[in-house]
Picture 1: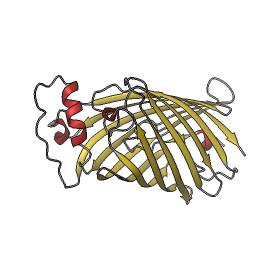
Picture 2: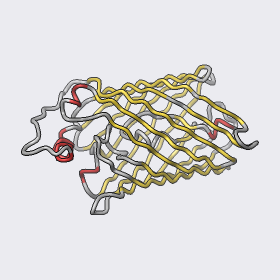
Picture 3: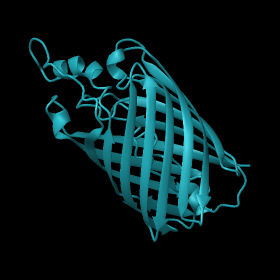
Picture 4: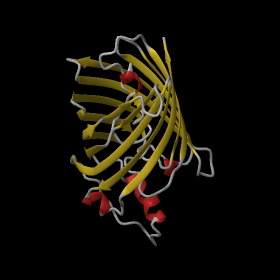
Length: 275
């Protein structure tokens, strides 16, 4: 049962924090399907790959259903707090996950995304996303590879390599308490077609005068950042309280475009319903 209360790191920015607190769908579980409802608050933008030093707090709600055959679906709603105009986005995801040999996970999903409001908060502008992920688990260690294709105003591809370790404590504080801490490191690669739309906004928030520097996006695939992520989950019964922090170091290419080191946090409360 405890794997139902553990959470995996998708570790694919732009959903760096919102997608981090998601269920580990049945690694070897014999249980029937289950439903997750989550309410969250984040200190920074969930839509851009790095949320460049601009505090974009948001409230989030998630409803996810996981079947016992590996099919799952979810609905996410993000409401940004700071903008003067009403700004929100919604994501509808369908996917399939499968575990092999008890320690190899494969996951494929499709996401439809809708954004309304202040474009400065949008980050990467996309309407459709296809994700393919794989992970290998051994004695607490997990190595994962995530592929993301984002299609919208531009077409972008991202590749993330991640390594994490799970520290778990049963009967923590109370008999039914379960604590999980999963520090991880991620190297992110990808195309840069998404960058031009952020340059003017980023330049202004750095106090830039006149026109921002001319930027011609690279058409080649390359290194973009290294991220350190620390999620902590505490479960009692069907409730899980989660917090996660991240610190991202941009590549030289991004730093040349005025990007700085990034940091942010996410706080969530999740309720699980078994069927």
